[in-house]
Image (cartoon, rainbow, N blue to C red; front, side, top):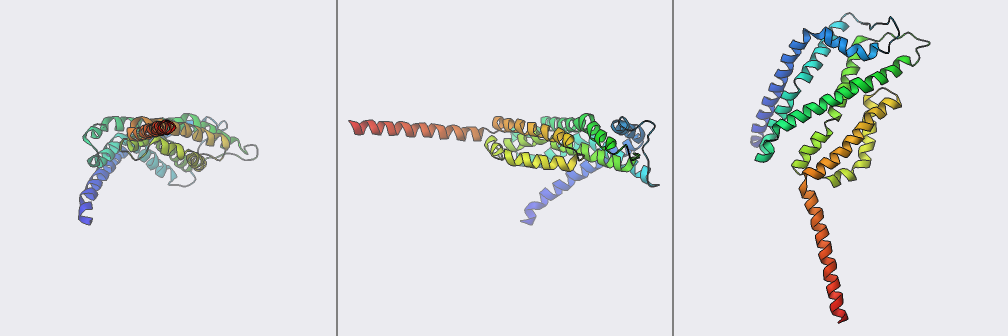
Amino acid sequence: MFDDLKPHIADLRKRLMISAGSVIIMFFACFFFYEPILSWMMVPVEAVLPPDSKMVAVEIQETFFTALKVAFFSGFILSLPVIFWQLWLFLAPGLYDHEKKLVFPFVFFATLMFLMGSSFAYYVVVPYGFEFLVNFGSAVVTILPSIGKYVGFFTKLLFGFGVAFELPVITFFLAKIGLVDDRMLKDFFKYAVVLIFILSSLLTPPDVLTQFLMAGPLIILYGVSIYIAKVFNPAAVDEEDDFEDNEEDFEDENEETYEEERK
């Protein structure tokens, strides 16, 4: 059994090494431009800080490690097409020939949805969330945000939204290989809503508005995923049609039997 897994483990190691190599190359490239990238990251919080306020570094090494975080996160974003491409190549041996041809749409839409989720977090969630956090208690305290903690929270938020927006892409893949259908997603909907709000409370600032700003789009994306599963998993539709046809045939047979008995 272990011998059968060796080729898959070797292939997985190869895909991980290529993905990691891409991230490392992009990391060094982004490290030289960390200052403009960091300035872009700080735009949402600077817009809501009191006048003449600045970000601070609490520890001596904080600025350096913040630059590393910025470079790594930027390198990861730029490496997304390679990462998704390697993921598809790892899964491709278990797919049919016509499914293997979907590699380019998968890489494109997976990257696009991640960027859409991160952009939504940057332009909508982060400004509202940090405005609430900065204004809360500002009458009695002076806000001196730590650059290291801000970047850590910022990258976690953008990463969480990016992953969450992959839901339609994941559903498309699972529907194509027959693991999910629209009926399963509909039955799981009420549990999915609870999980979505739990995830939103963990990834967003502690206020109701930003939690709804994350939960709302995710619920909509779940509805889109139900439609995707219905379109791309014809087995579930065929099964339902067969059940309806069998039910109609059964009713027709009962009517014929009833008419014969009356005669």
